[in-house]
Figure 1: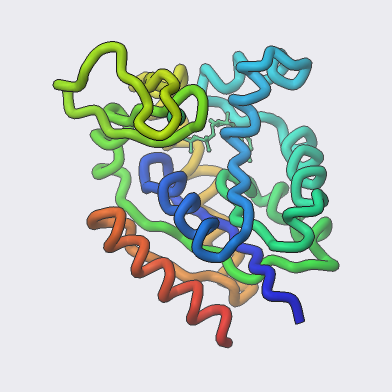
Figure 2: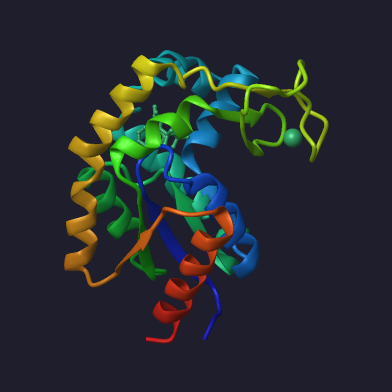
Length: 220
Ligand code: ADP
Ligand code: ZN
């Protein structure tokens, strides 16, 4: 039996998914696959994919299902993910994507789905303070008194606000999350794969809860 673990992380914008996925990935030795990061990397490179999705991302709309499904199918078929599993962050985001994922992961099925839960009222302030390193995607929280320009501690890259972290785009993404992605909680509960984890507290506190949830699911 392989030790690979295949996890989907659900949770609204600002729940802390990105930070926690990085930690889970290093704890369990599986790649962190963030569809948002894949798309932003394509935009930075100005690749054909990047040119198609740039406007969609800036407006906070969803990229179409077919494109997302083929992107993820390609990524989880790569050697590292086939061998070590993955932590999938940002996908699926619609029921159609979840159904397609059931199909493409038939041979190596998803082990568990985590809903990292933080109420909508609580994420807005986190999101307006969110900053990200352009180069290595490390997450930071602005306090208001940092040096300008702000340099990443990990890699020396520039720390910036994401183009889609404007109040309008944030609210739109939160509406879309409630309408299109929240139904996946029931979808995976019905498959008996769901673990709900409280996203409130320090990153360390949340990580401890997540690790316990993953260990519990692995030992079932
Ligand atoms: P956030 O969770 O803050 O919205 P992400 O980094 O997960 O940020 O995604 C950024 C953007 O990338 C989304 O607003 C959307 O435009 C696009 N995107 C990412 N994943 C998907 C997906 N599975 N389906 C459709 N669009 C996606
Ligand atoms: Zn960096």
